[in-house]
Image (cartoon, rainbow, N blue to C red):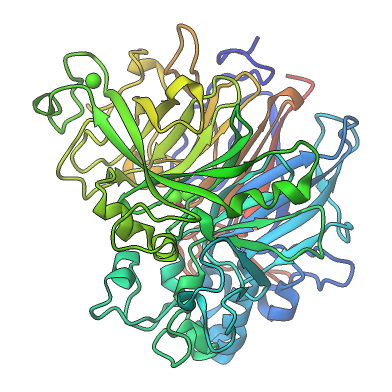
Length: 599
Ligand code: FEO
Ligand code: CA
Ligand code: CA
Ligand code: CA
């Protein structure tokens, strides 16, 4: 039994780590190392990574930047081979390249950026179960998907007028996936990935365009300037007005087939998808929960029309094209006057209540007056505004617990929260919270649910609004800005964070939260990531004594020549430094932490 609530991953909580520490910190008795990092060659013919001579052609054959979602799967019981899927959410050009390089090669820098986005599929091998995985250069399934890879489109909005451009008059062929944040592994072995902050890639007209404004497209040059070299990134260009409608979807890729064409699923709606994880309900329908990560935006769920057939991948891959898209409305059970905005518990001792899933549209019929099916899918935010969905404190990851069947939603923070309600009970919510939901009769296709706030995050020493199910606050690890969620085999919740350095002053982290028994609500920190990095991933293989995280944007607050992180290349000093013939910069990476024998 582990010191932190059982399972096969015993550890004693680490102390929170100062935000300036440029290392990965793991509990006593654990080792950690990088599996793969930005620029590592994926194929036999991939060039070695040379930061000063990087090219788009090289980047297309190397691991991309800013890994966020992570899946790791062993191929079989022996557990000696496997596959890793990671996405590459965005790029930080100011710490990837010197100012001189960017000035001399602006078009190449744009194309390197496009090539550093998307996803990577990488084969793994190891010598024994519980040992460290290594990536296989030239693995048969290795693949890069980038901002230029062709996707097909399915679902009711495929081929719609609003999806067509001069380059794609069919409205069914889209180049690239961008802003891919969290995601999920499906029961049929594919990966879903959410296109999140896609607006930032486009210079686009927002005057008098309610839909464009609601997404956040700005009528100004983008920071990366891709529109200078690729006209599709300027929505003012004739024929490209709809290019922005072709992003903001859940995409599905098949990591087992490197020749397959990835798909954008319009039936799951277009918004800033944080993630998408498919679960098979008791009646066989497939349900995907997905948060729209913006302040005051919504939680959605999709319920398939067809049902899952074990072993029939082709059939199962068609399930996300037909069904119904819902949006959540939360009702508190305590009088509004008892929610004081400071996090004080209402008289019944819980922030809790019931909720309903409001239908937005099916593949055949829109349920929102004034919206066709395709319009409701392309602009579900506008449709959901009309039917009174609940505006949440930035819904990040939403995941279903395979042990207790409940659904967990990370609300990361919302400094603009003014009007409170029972599910968003804190004004200016700085540290965020996690909501636990239970579908009616534990049926994922239900149209009603009950919910409670599992934890109100914060540092108990610095914040008065913390809540941990009544577990003594003095005994929990400080936690802030919950983002990605995962579960271990015992059904414990694991939460990684994005933003703790700017709130409670510690490095972003991975925590375990006990859900069952007398320790329910106990938060125990497992790991801390390097300076300015966000802790993503996470993947918990507790029966293999292993945890994986993606270290995203280390050194993000630095500049070339004044790097705040040089992780993980272990080169001395700060700033972009020359060591021998090598220039160093931080490199987003996949990390494995594992229990060592001599604990
Ligand atoms: Fe990419 Fe909502 O975090
Ligand atoms: Ca209540
Ligand atoms: Ca996220
Ligand atoms: Ca985030």
